[in-house]
Length: 330
Ligand code: NCD
Image (spheres, protein in one colour):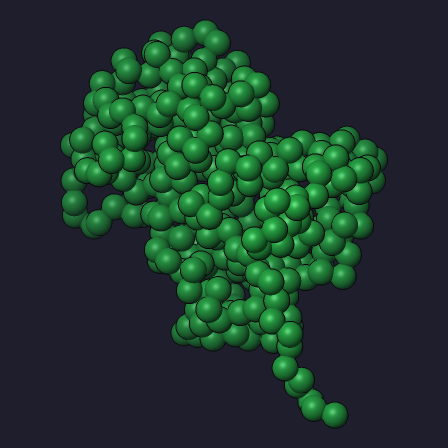
């Protein structure tokens, strides 16, 4: 007997970028996530859907929300979960991304969820493993599951994303969340306005099909005010993007005086309270920050389900009806 018989090639789909998805994919994932809501309200919040499957989460950057929600999502689906943080692992000893992924791949995981500070890291991982790969954030490039959970939250509130007006405020230039959300919102028919100082708005913004405004007053016209964190860790040392944080707050901070009744305020977290968002807005009636975190769980369950139990590549015409997915988890 061969000790390591060659494995049959796996049909693999990955979620590296929102560009991997079309409108039907987004609809299907959001509907599957809705189907999982009922599981969250049970005493036993677990379904056997991914029993016997293995999900590995590998975080080379700090994370609270994303890592905990992927881990819990996989556990709620009964998958076996291995969670690796770079600090405390062999990465601390200088092991390369490729070696780490190859080592973990020897356990034959079904999904690897990866966060890394380099643009393109998740795409590179697809070359070093047989697993489905989910990008949980690569530098300032993409964060597709954050986009999906934001779309889910907005749709739950407003019913439809078509013609919804979303103002994305702040440090767009360094934000993978902004890049993914611009793509996702445009795909689903929403209108996007970027608001912030010229130094923090990417120069190619106009080519992304969005409106750009530099005055904070522009948020008044939006249905949703999506606030971004000032990403100090991604700003080149010594480069002055804003004269000072105090001045940034005075000119672009989202305060209760700048938010009108009925507007939704969202933030991917972690928040710098008192800098990009005032504490009373973060905790106030317009805030949907806690809903975003809750949505993260069902949306990531839906993403894992979709990759492992959903349609095969090229089989879009034969999509399993969402009702089947919902029944399976009921
Ligand atoms: C975001 C990230 O890591 O890109 N956070 C998150 O995933 N919830 C946004 C940020 O760090 O500002």
